[in-house]
Image 1 (cartoon, one colour):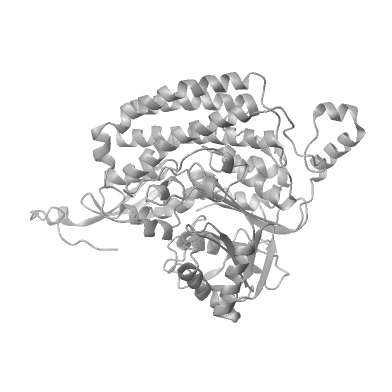
Image 2 (tube, rainbow over the protein chains, first blue to last red):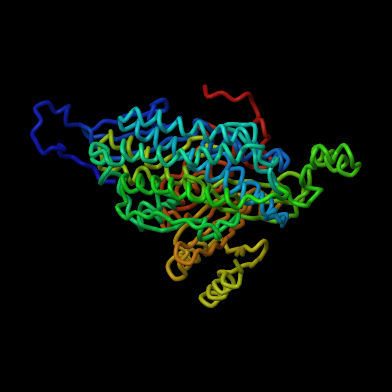
Length: 405
Length: 160
């Protein structure tokens, strides 16, 4: 931490009180802190000398709660962590349990998982773009973004019944298959979306005001970014081409054709460009996943773990018994511990799950990308203006639900 | 991904100093090395500088239960942005002496992870520059993720 004793502009100040440092408490209700984040800013004039993030306002003890809930009940808790990317949370959680159970997931379920996760990534990036632009002062972008996001939420709702809390992925597969007509609606969205992307590029990317607000701000070099544990678009904006979909593949991502956008400017503008390019890549992956949708089962063949279909329950006594046992007593997961990382929309979302053999986990820990990315805010915002802190927070794309858990 | 590559790292570490490796366990395609508490900094330094494990993906605590000894675990999930392998280091701590060396000097990201582990489990990281509660308020009594801490707390909780 460097302490600046001179006046910022180097001019003599007549009133000494104008030259002194002050502490500004920003938040927790500040609109551009994306939730309930409070920052203690040590300022010299408008120059930020030091930033101390204060978190925990949204702490609800989710990791404690997991230990008291059966494995399948934990899925609904994960929805409420990163509430802009709930399907990603579902996926990390169920894949950790599946890793412990050593379950084989049917092909169709894998494809639908990829399809829904990429749609969710687009939706999450839409909120990021809208709020990021709103923070910096471009208001109309917000409405265009939320219009697109609304379409995706409608798709997710049609499949799972929930807009923000889908709980669509279950241990062993999916809640249920995609509804009739989903293909058509999804295709309609996919056809319309490139035009929306064009709109964003016209409104934001090519805007010189936007560029002057984002270039050379919030710089974090490659080595620092790794030391601070940044992942996802924030790390790729600092010149590291790391994407877990490619480098620790899951759900068959290694068979999809997509690029990893990397920018080397290390500033807000670089992180912005990475996310904008990711929208195109996600769009590409959704298209490929749509083509791969072939009829087949969406639940693993594991009657002791996966809830049976309602139709089976009416016809077969053993299905009814399994249903009763899973709901009333849960299912046991073999003792052991796993760490399951996925590439969520904000970075590496890792789930550490430890089982001692019972129907409830012994410990579930979420490594939230927002939590880690926010911890690097002090080093990014040092020496910037207060208004730039807002731009930097926007470029980190944080969700406080995940940070505080 | 096979685990042969990970065992190579374990062998190399053993070659550097056999005292660093307590117990090596392989399960679910992951390798866990239990490291003696006093050598965690050295092991991490070696893995970071010589073996390419440059990113600390996660650091989290776990409680085995009040009747167990050693009671607490600290798990370090290392990742490499060069060869994309993952390795888990584990340090076990007893309840009477829950001290571990901080890895904050090696990875800045450990700062918040260690604060979180201190907040929720009461594990004290020696050498941490700013070890205070992060998720719970500073006046909070006890460590909420310990197994003997009740789910609903002790009192109707208020900040006043």
